[in-house]
Picture 1 (tube, rainbow, N blue to C red):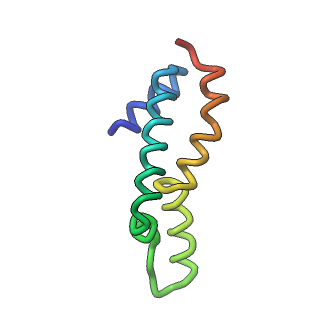
Picture 2 (picture 1 turned 90 degrees about the horizontal axis):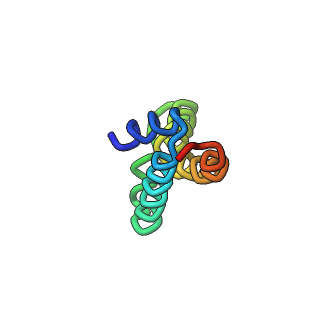
Length: 84
């Protein structure tokens, strides 16, 4: 739920929303660093190799460390263009 609120705030160019999204991403990466089982939980296992790779890539992008890193990379630009 917080990410939906932060997403709406970022859409409306609010700095508080950018800082909130950055905080959530940092917390997610710290938890992932200290609990390696979390990465294994994000990977999709299937009998069909292409589905495993495709679904794991989507999961890591949308709800994993790749998405978190992309948000952190975009944060300076978002803060530059956001209003108070």
